[in-house]
Amino acid sequence: MIIQKFGGIAMQNQQQRAKCIQHIRQALSKHRAVIVVVSAMGREGDAYSTDDLLTLTDSFSKSSEARDLAASCGELIAAAVISAELSTEGIDNTIIYGQNTGIRTSGEFCNATIDKINSTHIVNTLQTHSCIIVPGFQGMNIQGKFMTLGRGGSDLTAIALASALHARHVEFFKDVPGVMSADPHTTSNYKRFDKLSFDEFLPLLKCNRPVIQEKAAVYAKQKAMPLHIRGIASNEEGTWILP
Image (cartoon, rainbow, N blue to C red; front, side, top):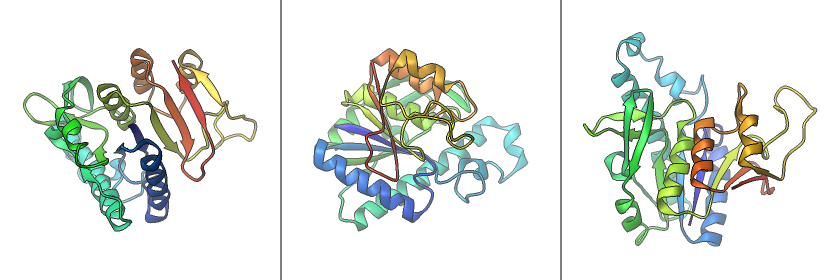
């Protein structure tokens, strides 16, 4: 079993999501079971992106609890959409969200910490469904309130679930074909790495557009969880981050 994480660009529209579905189908064929973690669809300017949901009222600045509840809706919508489209393509799946994910959080709203994961419900569901969709970026505190994990927090969701479920590795699908030596959006002078250690990888995340959330990568290093960073648009091998 592996975890696949699809970010906002991968989930942005139906054409992009068709590529997600292709990768999910391939993973099911190879690994037999897949947990799919999704971000909200698109980026700023897209109707259901986190950034746009948070513009619904200026009053979110006065209530971090309300802000987190609104922010979590983007991933819930994305999970519903990809689940329905997978079903249309004949891929049996189910969505697990809210308390049922077992992700218990604490700390501050908008930048919560994962305290523990009770994987019982997910493990039991894998007995009847080989593909499970989980909205990223969120957990629930002991009072049952939604808390989000900071920008890029869906990456942390994927890695934390992988560790709790003893997955083989986590695949991240991006709009670039792997980890690059420089930002390909700003320069043509870059190369793709085939393989990196975590000590080599972490310094590359100290930039304006890290390929995954730095906090998530630190967590993966602590848990010795292999990461596979790939491009959404192809079947290229991408970059392996290995303990």
